Length: 553
Image 1: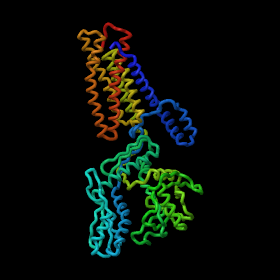
Image 2 (image 1 turned 120 degrees about the vertical axis):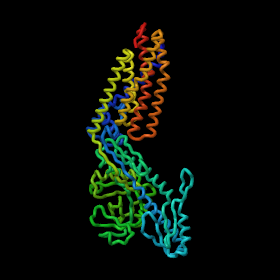
Image 3 (image 1 turned 180 degrees about the vertical axis):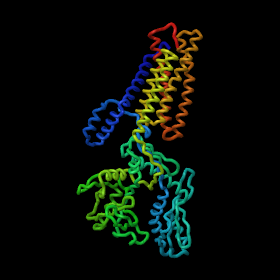
Image 4 (image 1 turned 90 degrees about the horizontal axis):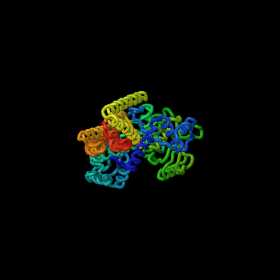
């Protein structure tokens, strides 16, 4: 105990100093946050306003700039619970199967006779054949288009079920394929929503699946739930179709044709080809811009496959109309004046700058595979978040002061050593949260308050052990040494079990529960370090300098 190695003292001191340095930016939260935002814009090559340049100069670039991100309940923002209409994908899958099934039946036209699609239920693909006696041949042709569905348990069934009803061939998705499609749809929706939210530059959003077809979205720092819904609520399904003709009423068209209204021209409808020439899946980039008349627009660029299809169609159809469709509305339908072979184009319409910017974000992030329906929406105002921060700050200060007073009254000088370690413990905790870029929520503050109380437990065990050793007439140096040695096992056991609990909470919980688990787990690690190493180092320094004959714990 009397020989505390110099290298160990140096290492512990450096760790504590690093904790203070990396915690420091949180004391200047707004200044550092504004400087970080301005530097991100600078890295993206954007010109900074005078205010943003002042923000960059407000915090030195060489200083640590990591911050503890504030969660929805502390910063304010938007909360949405949405339901993905996964059943909409079934009809699209069957629509995509129809051209292949039609071609397969045409190859057997001599046997099955004429074929005609029957529009009845969008979840079924029905085809009426001219020769019902050859239904078996039609069934075999349809069966040849099905694929096995592979799951963790192996091949369970085919992706489509095929049956005959009189003179009609009926194709539906199998239950196994519906389950697999639902999972793919939800995973794709999660990823696209995450990309859309990330494009807005918000910090630490919470986007997670709930149940079979629901998604929870919490975005701190955004103005309102309506603003968030404008970003993620639009399907943003972009397709390019050939225009068969323009009509003034949808009733003029035979049932089964695709008739969509014009976004700009009131009372005008377009009859479109059933299959898109190119879709938004072929886009690789989209940016807001202005057209030759100075109106807001969106420029886009295709991948090689999309550029080839786009170029071939425009080359072979000069003089015809070409419709750009977004979520069931024709944005624009210009005439093809010359082949467009460069793989890029421009979408013009009745946009303002904000709408063109948002459309570019949606197109870059990709289209949602299905529509979403809002089940719950809530806006947390920044004032409420500030109230939570103030309440959390008061709770931390009260807990801090109460624990420090108790330690001084109970253990005197040794209590002061424990209080110094407690301050360093909180600094280390915030330093780790800042470096990790973790999100602090109200339950997270509760975890910090709990950690403050638990942080002195180890010191209490050590100091009580030292008291017991002093009662057996051992010398101060020996009593201190035995106190740390005999209390170590109890300290280790208690904190390991609590840390396991924190890990389970993090693994099994979600949202606020995870925030509590993160701060609790980090607090356990830092409190053990501060109790076993920092307090012991302080006691060793004091004893080595004073060499008291007796000590009072």
